[in-house]
Amino acid sequence: MAPPPPSPPSVMLRTVLLLLRVLTAAFLVITVALVSTNTVTLDIQGTSIKMHFNDVYAYRYMLAAAVIGLGYAVVQLVFTISQFATGTIHPFNYLFSFYGDKIISYLLATGSAAGFGVSKDLKDTYLALIDFDSTDPVDNFFSKGYASASLLLFAFVSLAVLSVFSSLVLSKRPIQVVNLLLRVLTAIFLVISVIVLTTNSVTVGSIKFHFNDVYAYRYMLAAAVIGLIYAVIQLIFTICQFATGVTNSFSYQLDFYGDKLVSYLVATGSAAGFGVTKDLKDAFIALVALDSTDPVDEFFSKGYASASLLLFAFLCLAVLSVFSVVLFSLRVLTVAFLVITVIILSTNSVTIVSQGNSLKFHFKDVYAYRYMFSAAIIGLLYAVIQLFFSISELATRTKNPFNYQLDFYGDKIISYLVATGSAAGFGVTKDLKDTFLALVVLDSTDPVDKLFSRGYASASMLLFAFFCLAVLSVFSSHTIAKHQLS
Image 1 (cartoon, rainbow, N blue to C red):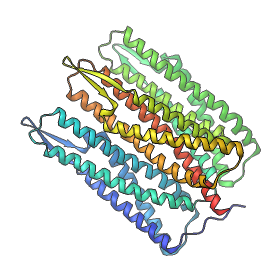
Image 2: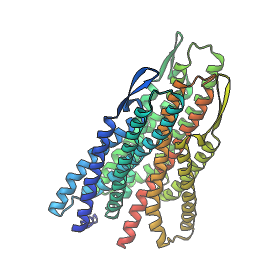
Image 3: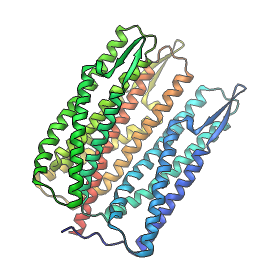
Image 4: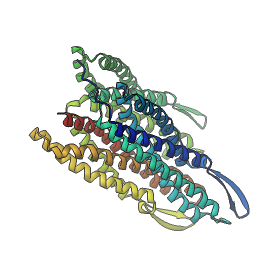
């Protein structure tokens, strides 16, 4: 028999929730209005240049986050008004609020972080490299960027508080939902990997180059296709189990052996893709006289993208295959990703040569990278403490009551911190690199490529750490709900 849904919140709590939903929607409406109307005319030595928010990738992401968040906020506002009027909550709304508040709050937090990061570093770069007739338009443009990021931050705070409430009235089936979510993510990653790989072809000079010409890419495609077929079959079984609440005895065997075998296959496909992409790209550039390296870069970038997606699919399958010790595995992965982030970022320095002048450039020169580094260090300290507690719990089979609170609030706060660090890193890396290459006369672009490639790598590692913490946050919400009900 299925457990009854949680009791509806009190009238006072429903009033607070309604107010927070209204505030979230209001902040997002103003954000959308500010970002979408952010345009200025820059006068540079008598030449007028129109600059629009679309010219900054991080601002595009900020607008997308605000629009998606606003759509969600309006839907939730309708539900909340209905609940407030009737005093009843449909069982579906518990799960919708629980996962919706989490996902959208992460989206808003990363949008805000990207906006703050790029506004600071891009404004400083513009003012340092361009001789403006007046700096007022630049100040105005980036001030609106700051304002938009601030409003997104306020919307995130409202939604984060709502996320705590929705976690505390959690339904009792999050484990099945996490399982379903991981199956869906696995299938999505594999579908995209197959599409990226099968469409990967370029013309170098007069020679057509296709993914089929690289044996490792063939293996990668085979691994992705087999994994996708398995993921779809498992997704059908998981949906049936979720709907009926019954698991067929055959499914236990399929889960146990299938998840292990297919995760190994997908992992080796990803490894083969990463390995051959690096070595073959270096060999190509070294041995072939190319009129332009752009097609080669594009071809192997797609190789990296496919391998990365396979890696994401493997991580989902790996979590599914070790579900019994999933919390400990995720703690270990979080520590590993954050250690790698700290190492890459702290060693990220290059010497840039411009017109014979050498300039030492360090990660500390980019404010967004400083924030990323701080987020990684704080996250690492938290992850190590949590890893110690997890080992203790595994060994003793007991859990200190304080740890329920630490897991619940700690996983939420640190996952937000790590997510915003990753977003700030991705946002500033893209826009600052483009600005650098456009405005600075470089003797060689290799040092700039290296600096910002490491920025991308650090942001990616932080993103992986965030995924682990986000899943842990779901489990800790479920655990504290059970603990309070027991």
